Image (cartoon, rainbow, N blue to C red; front, side):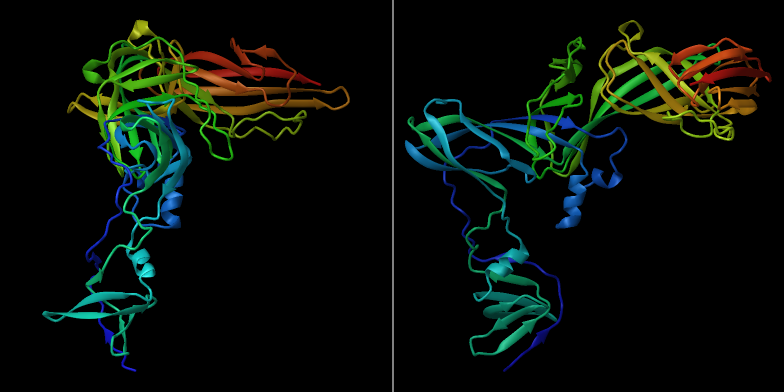
Length: 517
């Protein structure tokens, strides 16, 4: 037996005399495409690796695609020639991430007399490995570069493990561990170059039909990024905002949508957990934003959600991230800077029994948080429904007229006339301190008293307003029996002390709460 080994080289595959699948039904290019995208993305939660094309194959790519939290309903209209009776229609250029169970085909020309008898989704796409597997025990031609020459080997492919094993015409066996080209006489049956929908259609009316195909695809999503510029007002607690909004769209669905009519749904649309089938969609309600500028987005009510329609066609290439302006920048929106001191050193949560341990909750947090607050109302230049998204806030440095980043937050879907609260960070020159002064408990009479002292110090050269937030976490039945300052009851276990602290000043709050059960 004659066995020869060759050296590795660049791998390429060439089809020799390829016989491509013949279309089963005459089909023109897509006349129109409409896309409605639904997002389940948490604001700011899309990892950077999903912004770029997902290369490779297998489980790794499947996991990444599965992390794109959204889906789209694709609607395409095409003109197709149908013969009378039964005919097979092959529909290419569909998304590789299609859910085949959601596909529908309809003739707009003769809806009553045209029916789909069978429907198939073919996705066994051609690849180097699949071609090799299909040509086991069949003849192929392999080319290999040896110095400045190209050597050609023809034989029956016996194996692809660890290189190509060929049985030559003289009975010898050759192992080629590296090659530059492989030539196949034809494309094996069953392999296709694009995901394809195939219908077995019956019609009573022959000729050209206007058809509509609708399906759902995953691996496509959208979210909103808000770019905000803050300008300080006349005092430390006021200012104005310039609010701009951009829609970001990731398309990893495996298809390009040229000149598509684009719609975006904002709202929490319920999905059946399993199986993943498209359910009746709800959309939401509010006043329209008015006519879109330069073909921009127009918002309108749709069921209980909001529908944003782009006023011009747009192309969404596969493996791409696109940004489109959601609405023109709203300028000089009045806002309030809010400082909040929450002295508890842990995240508050309610308990099912009285918390009588005196050492619980005495840890102190010293940081004072900074918020910007404005009302989403028409009178101040806003008043449009705001989809959930990430808000990035910058401020102009007058020294060199440059914008400097000062913080970011995320908002949920916010209708008009509701308040928007943006957390930016913690104040540098304002410090808080919280401590327990006294604690008494009587287990026989089922009561306890706790006295808390809170200090807020202002090291700025101007007075500030601060909201001191307290959670009465020890039990549900409580009463403030003594307090140095006025408080506001926010809910059943939360109170606020609104205070004003002079420049380089300090304010001390002391209150006693009585719990009973």
